[in-house]
Length: 332
Ligand SMILES: [Zn+2]
Image (cartoon, rainbow, N blue to C red; front, side, top):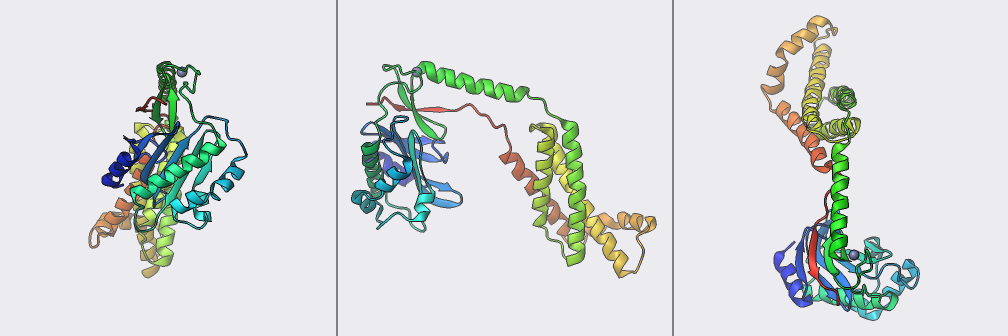
């Protein structure tokens, strides 16, 4: 969120800024407190503004069941005081997770972001509480146990203390996973069939909805775009350029065909005409004039359909990416 709040956090905690790391991929600050690596930042999560707290401890060293530890956590008066709360509500609990090697807490706020001083105070108290029930991370590489050359990194959604050799190995594994995905074959035939089937179904649904309600709900076109792009991607088993081009074309076709059906049946009802081949051709001859002529509704529908098809693209990319290691420093 605000850079200046994050800057203040960095100063108060002697942490360093890390972009695109941590659970919400935003700007955070990371460092260590009493041997516990920690990351904190003003983020957005599920359309809520909030503050992310992430503290790492040594894997498997939690001295009791996570539920019990969390319960004790929030009986600590100093932590409650730092949070400015009498007790921890359900909303806070829903955004909290104590795993086998980390504690994660996203604390939403409603209007004003909590001051960096308060965030710092909460984080320090969280670490003090964790210290009672778990062991600091230590200097050794978490992957191979080598104790001399490890360094703390912000990696993906977490913090990790690894040596150069292990880091190179992890990155190589990521590259291989990516290469494996790239080699995976796609099925354009199945993708095309699935896309056409959904496009036709959606055209009839769209046409029928407009016909019976006597109204064109342009926003519904987003759903059509989403459904078609989803069907194409599923059918092809892998996102390719062919699918990226096919889905919007089918979406435009589906929306236009749906509008055509709507106009056809509306005219047939109003003029008391049977739907014959002549009527179909007649409507088709004047279709683009009606659709894009007097009102902009045709353009609007097509636009919303394309929005839907685009949403799928941006959410449906290669599932594997090479993780970026952002160095934080040596553990002490
Ligand atoms: Zn190692």
